[in-house]
Image 1: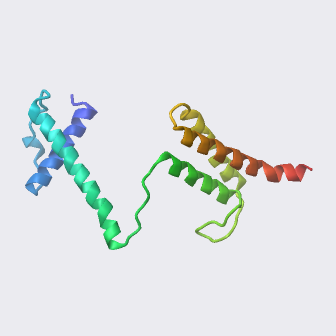
Image 2: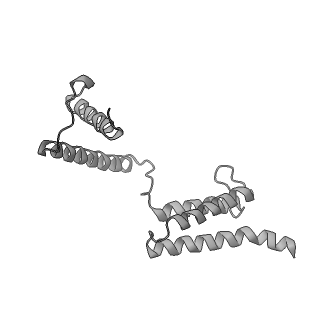
Image 3: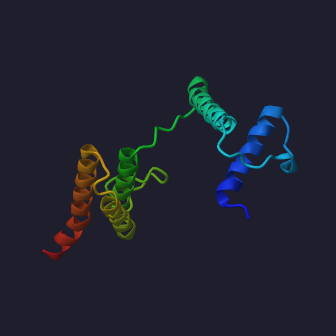
Length: 154
């Protein structure tokens, strides 16, 4: 019985063969997995190098064509994107799609709670800068979320 790992390796091997030959490969011609020999190692390194080259080409292509290039994904960008969505839901800024300011407290609470969950789950795994950013964003958003309710009670 094949394990999921061996199946995915087999698929990757077939993809690589079809790219090398310029045609689809026949799964029946696939040789069984090796025993970790040097040729298996070279094959893996070739796959990694091909992948790196393709990624570099993809990064350069949009810049050359003047197309939108998304920023590099990182934790700070992810957290600030969520905070921006929470600010929109709190009515602090216009929704970019509708150009209207709308309040959606349930959505804001969900996003703030999601950021709180991320803070708990990533405790001890963030850089000091990331920890400070997350703490500050949560403080500001929680304060903004509670502010309208506090004013209504007075």
